[in-house]
Length: 467
Ligand code: AMP
Ligand code: ZN
Image (tube, rainbow, N blue to C red; front, side, top):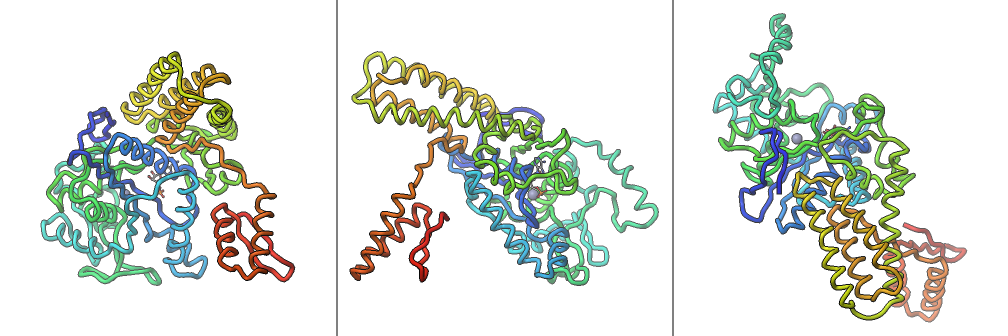
């Protein structure tokens, strides 16, 4: 399997540090609002990378953080007059709901910055002791000039960057030794959350959070570090500097970055105000459509969001769902095992899976993988028609479901729970209660809940709602 590595600007064969295991870290969102669909892109594409690696037999330790201490969170907490923690906890929960809707698997660990402060204090102290950090009036900076490899990820011309930032140093407006030095720890301002430290009562800089959480949950050296391409510089460059100077080891072997989700060819972002939240999209579409849309492009290609493209994604996904559904009906009506000819056809069908795997092995090319799924759908629509054996229709159906499942796409129609079935169960429950058979009554309530139906006993009788 090949992965494009931002560090070397090449597609490289993926070789894990430990055989059969992958240690992967994906920078997660800052939780001060509902996530927008730009934030959803790294979630979906790296969840798909994880699923594919799991399909290939790797055990993936997947860590993705929530940044829960930040200026924007503090600003929102002041606006609402509630503690910062209440804001971050609220939006972590909302983010998890969106992730579930998009069928993004929960990470092995979702660390939160505010719960890892001790690790940050420890790493900053190590950097101080080694001379990679300095304290000016309670603000601790990283000394970028001391790390010779600084800039290796972003391939930036550091001299240009330095000269751009020099004016502040000359006028004495900045206390840094070098324009590229960045904050590891900063003193609190009035009313802000803070932690005690040897340098000041304050809070960590953003970059140190990821270095520490990655170290704690995955170790000093990891296989893959990922995020959106806006994070290459300075965030990931700074993470490398901190981790490699503190730990004395290569931080991450492969760096993966997704391109932007644009709208009218500009990056979708909170600050530009040109965003749609995942929640807004979910009001109009099943979030599987959003996932399908994201995966129809390669993760390193920019994609432009529009209503039209969502409509065409919906239609395309529906073609797969309809095919799987009709295969089910064909299988239900048919009988028997595969004929000789069908066995040959199934052997031919394996070519689509090979194509799918070749695409995914080539730097997670989901666009080509989806094209292979559509070839399989075409095969299904021509070969698995009425008159075929039950075993053949089932095998074809299973193949489509399995390939889509690797992409995290659910293509089986959800069984509709009919109102009449619910009413019948409610009547049975009422009768059970009358007969003092409370065990059965409770059982029915639980059964309905599993079907997504919530019962409420009112004075007027039982009312039900869909959860
Ligand atoms: P943030 O909450 O801004 O730190 O972003 C969380 C993640 O979403 C990071 O990996 C960003 O790079 C990514 N991201 C933010 N906006 C976009 C966008 N428009 N397209 C793709 N990725 C984005
Ligand atoms: Zn990060």
